[in-house]
Length: 196
Image: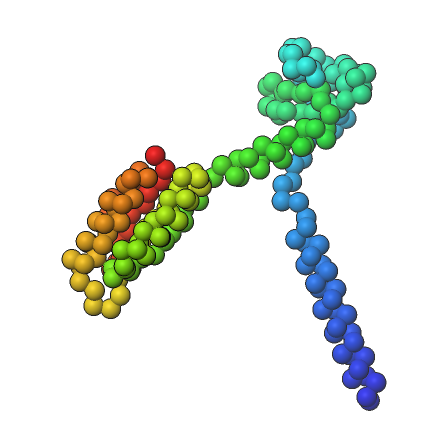
């Protein structure tokens, strides 16, 4: 009876370790899945061919294009699978995959983010300056837009909130361009800024 208790415990430990290993393996899989139709997998009888130098060779039969690619010890890769005018290029497959992934990564990096900073109406002058310095660094690096939100606390007077937001706007104009003017979101006020 006792042995069954321990064997179950050991099995549970082993299973947890296996689950951790599987999770690690899933995390390490590549993000970008790039598939090409190449060489004998191309089904079009005629192709518009681009050679490895980038020259357009016009319409060529698939067999002729494959022969030319094999002579140069490269691959024939389908670039455009338009039924009327399919385009293929003579290029090394690994190089084409690398360039495609590089392009996808560059496009993913190009997307700008919006970061939000919260302030309260009774913020001290020096605290506001320190926060605005951090926002200035973020905006000038060109990382995206910054949203400055003034959060209402308790029974905060709307006049105090307007004054504080006006100060923040005035100080942020020195280093950034205001995308949206002061907007009310429930009880909060916010503006969005970006680099000039």
